[in-house]
Image (cartoon, rainbow, N blue to C red; front, side, top):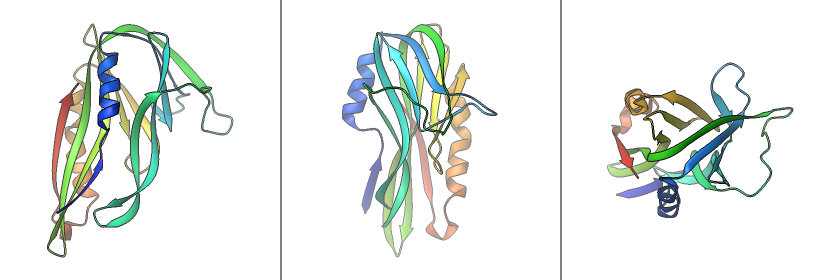
Length: 185
């Protein structure tokens, strides 16, 4: 069995853990035109430091073929926050709440190709839960480089549709098996 890991790595998990208990001061994103989507990046000001969540394609061996896959990354950011869209505009939102919990939305997809099982491990979203229970979720676009931003309570409930969306993206001849799971940091 071959395994492709496109999940957020252990160094990033450690970085995210270090943010629990800190103040999420502001969020910066592309100007919302029709939907709450930011192209490529969402930036955060947390306890005076700037961080970025990015979603860009990387070429990886995906289930036996070299393919582009949408990949979430979270890291400290020291450059200028700029729009990735020509004539785009970065907007800010003041939040000023403490991060109580961070949850990763992950999946494990298993397919069979020529009697060989292949697995893809992937991170689809990050959910920040604040001190009052209010949440922000940041979900990658599996077929683009956008980050969908949702706000509200119990946002993990909205990911029940993700398993069906992933199943629909595979040829049924591959006998896809998808397990969706949440990892609290």
